[in-house]
Image 1 (cartoon, chains in turn blue, purple):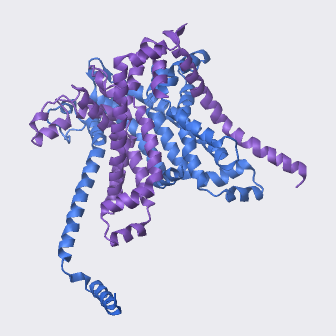
Image 2: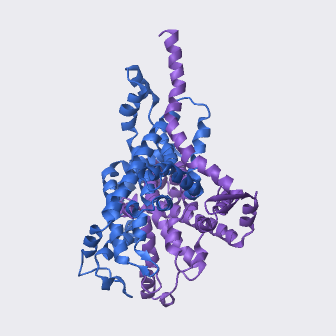
Image 3: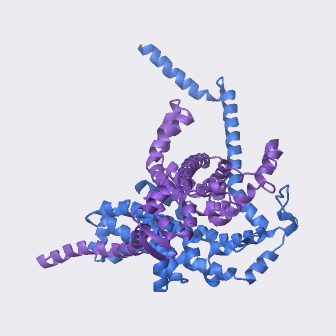
Length: 304
Length: 278
């Protein structure tokens, strides 16, 4: 290519950049982009509708009068809302069951985060023999479904008197969530420079102080993600909770919801009211830790 | 530092990690390890309620493997796992792309996508079952008002394939919040200048996704894939809630068959799980 054509080409680029507003085909390109944006917006609206619909339907059903719940043409709004189901339900056992669920899920979350943090710190900061074997073994443990352990555990709980106690279920749920917590938090700790703990140690802190005051605050996003994971796991866990808590007064969320379904059918209004009541604490929990959510998931997953 | 202090410090470095690991390892060994070994042991015996019967060796396993229903349940588990894992991964990647597109209102949409996570899983399953009800379901109403007359009163739970489809939809829906948030965070870590450079060089949006975004997100996608697969294999509550009463047995994969056989004899469940699970 000769010098002259190069210069010409360069000038052309420059003029097209200057005259960008009116070059031919600009209108078509703009139209294409507008159509693209419109389609994308429609897709976005569809996503929003599908993901929120069951949630909306749950709340709507809980305040619909009985006659509007089962209709051949679904009714997407009610002009006659009623709170009577809430008042009847709140008079009954539900407050107690909610408390059971909060105690168990909260206990399991706390245990698995604290123990997970300790184990993850050990795995990421010390030279241990068989480190990767331990890490992989934890993942394998995570793969075992609860059903594998439920029978022997039931027998063991019966002899040790842990049936129908909070402690028993908290221990079981912690074990279910713990392996994943260790993995998640370990991923986050890998992103925190070792020099930080060393600096703290040189300054006279002991290992425990370094962990609590330096490392824990930095790992908070990862801790938040694993806390949500543990909480949701325990909150929704059906099999172990139903097996180990047989007394009516010890029932948790899944048990509370099942009482609305009998051989004769399902009390939809009641089920949805109870579901709404049970969804509230989780929503509050989300709001409390939302700041750490998006940032946390990325770093943890990348490093994990 | 004296020699003594140095050696004490070295000893400390050896002991501390084990002290930190101890509660986790002891807990998991007691709650999962011991019952797991015990389950294997039970599986080699005849079962009578909660008592252990006579030693039968691998008989329970042979019975399980040759049982047609069990084989069918295993196949269904694999199919359901594949469908829900692939479906939820692809769906949440697409949703994350939309959320990352920079259109107005995407912050609100992110909240809408995450909110269903708060819903009790059992209730979500119940609601999906209701939505696909032949008479009172929203889905049939929607499809038939869109002019698809064949769905008027269509019984989704009447045949195995469509029932499996409904369960898959419910499971995928439940998985989307977590996967989408993780994917979105990963997408945000894709360097913007590389994407811009590729677009200026004339790469299509699809090419950019395939050649730049997905490779950058690969570590996250792999971790999520492993997690999703593990969880899908353990799917229990959705299937239990959605298909229990009216005998729609054909949708029940492995985990539910376990709970049923368990009532008959614990050892056969054990055998079962040992065989397919591990």
